[in-house]
Image (cartoon, rainbow, N blue to C red; front, side, top):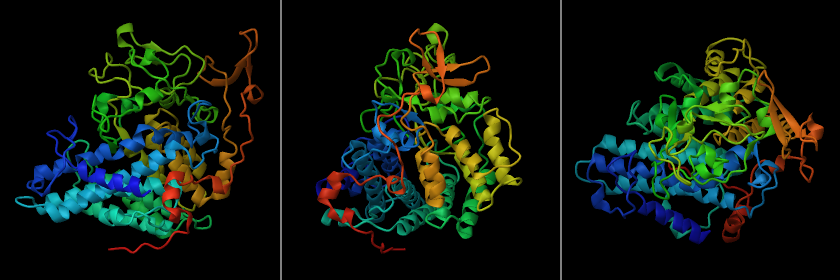
Length: 542
């Protein structure tokens, strides 16, 4: 733990560097001394790594099994099945990757904050200083919000030097982690601009995330009810974004996941990967997600992930736009893949991952696709998320929501997907809508943890009825577009449908409350035995 955290803190100091272009070039990895912070432009460059290098370790691999596998968006018996089947142990490398990755964000953010407060000189304006600190605090808050929903209590750090001096630190209470996140986000809301350069954070992004945090806290360990004060704050912040930001949904859902539409009007906050960038600044997920070189223009890939039975069953019959943008299913056609051949039609009987697979270098990607190097940004927050957050906050403790602006914005998401509007919605409707809207965007598990903390019995029942670890050897699509799950008989022509024809896991899956949060990485526990101790209160500086 000591060596690992020391390395993280040191790396954070080294990576705060300058680039000529925020979006098109990676920052150089040179050490930055006090003379660097002499202009607003230099200070802006210093925050650029917060959008890519800080997130690299998490995005490199851990993001998929934790954010989507855990939610049962997809399943593979060969690629991290333990996350779907709740068999994760403290030895899992993805836990270490996520833990160290999030603390890279935290310590890099701390490094920026400290540098702004102690090393700026010359003509650096106060506005530039507060904006840089706001960006750093926003990213720090995002990292802790992820961590809270993976582990519960975590270690709060806002001074890297104290971490270097004593890396063996206790866990802090969940309620203090929430407050720490809220404090950071309130600062970001106040000091970030409403408009910024493409890809840069705005106050609208901070308000959207703050709404999600208040909604999560409203029901967190609250005995099956949601705190009305937190609900009201969630409604206020989400409603402000929905009503007053001037932003709108992309017209075509599938366009959200095309390279040319990075930083589109719906993207509130995203990891900013450098197309064809070097290691630590590129999006490595392409080869992990794509199932065949047919859809990558010959670029090497190795995914065995398929949409889970449970996930594919969430789509309504009319919801083909979102389903086809997320998973390949037999007969689905993509004009922007294999463009030289007139497009690509999937003819298999599986359900490989489509979202995150934009095609090959010769498709509409300006040549910016290669092995483990996708030009796509990774969404942290998009506007549809805020719309559905607003709807859920408006629902609050009621059994149903039958009118009002929350329902209106909920239906805007469905309208974009070309599915029928609802006249009334329940929490079950919201759960289902969020799953299909954000399938394979590495966020569904985090929502599920929030609902578990609100209604644990409901969510345990939900998890245990998800067909986790089951596979269908064949998925066929009838003339109406409905999917059917099963297998072909030994003759290869007779399709056998139904659960009795699924391939079942070799063990019984019985998910209990203690299984929801993931264990702390064993390597860190060995070095820091305090991770086995009860969390302690945090001493706040503000």
